[in-house]
Length: 485
Image 1 (tube, rainbow, N blue to C red):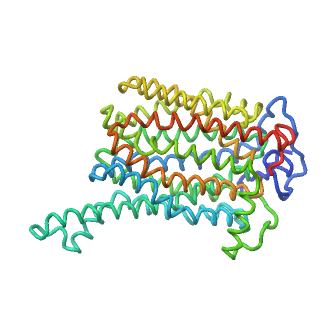
Image 2 (image 1 turned 45 degrees about the horizontal axis):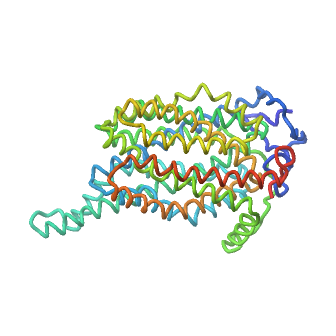
Image 3 (image 1 turned 180 degrees about the vertical axis):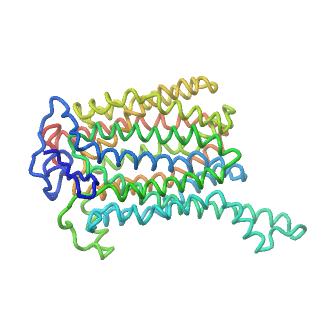
């Protein structure tokens, strides 16, 4: 049995792995009677009937990643064109969206785990938020025009009438409108992308998760390549068209994926009290913070989130202002350096399925730290940037695949979304503070080269925490008998 069934309408459906495999904790509905082997000396071949569901999920990831490049790649440039400071950029692009989603995402994730509809428990959230993502994304480049309309309505654009105060008020209006549109996009996308991430372990059997995540990483990089190579160069003169075009393309493509992917029958929900928010938070906190393994896990991802703040906010400005690249050059560099590690994809997936992500993730964390430190000292221009980025992305490729498999095999299957949202919740609390601190730091030092030193130091600390998680994983059964606490 392949754990895959075809519906009469042609859509592929993969059932959940049986309870008792890696990543299971509290009893989950047993949807297949074939037990997972406890030890795989060799990675099992992927059955042909599973490739259909793989295809739709990989296409969905491609179209999602393509859309998610717009705001991180172009948002900072767009805000800088309207004279916003580094601190304002860090608040708008990082802290404010996190603040809005901080207390909403745990509820969404918890309800997603407990939801039971004929369309599944993840896809309804994705279908509702996808059109809202498109509308918000299309509104972002129109923020200065919306601000201009507000300025005209308030009389701030009238020459000779409080010119200084009017100019200050106009800048504040542009900042406010950008904050609203980018926060709206960030929130809706967080809901949709989170539910999509929760969907993957629901429909991909556990014994194939390493290779699937490796393929997923390939399609993620393909989406990044298509955007940076074909769209980013157009943004210099056609910023609005890029936002709208990518948004509409994503909306149509992702809705098709939602229609074609069918979720399995999950059985009855494990908690019927989801109507009461207080009961939700009480149960959520009791389950998510009950074991020290999870506490170390939250600490690890919070530290990783802080390590990524500088690069997420200012790497594009390092390329633009420090190295002197324009939008077209940046797109070419990012595109080619992103796909360079693709030949490693198959090797990476097999490595994780055989040697377990809990072991190899520590090695990759150390290598990430060394790579960032090398970038700080040795990047001197566009050529050295390309050489360094290609080498670093090879390590980052392994890291990304390993993290995905790491969470799937470590967390309880029945409440996967709940625990992932808790990781995001704790990380957001910390990163929300780190964002403005990072912006103030770069306003103070005035040198974007520190986008490399910042993560180099923090990622080394991450490796130490991951070692502590590895020891807890061994205490809970290790590679052959692990049961999520």
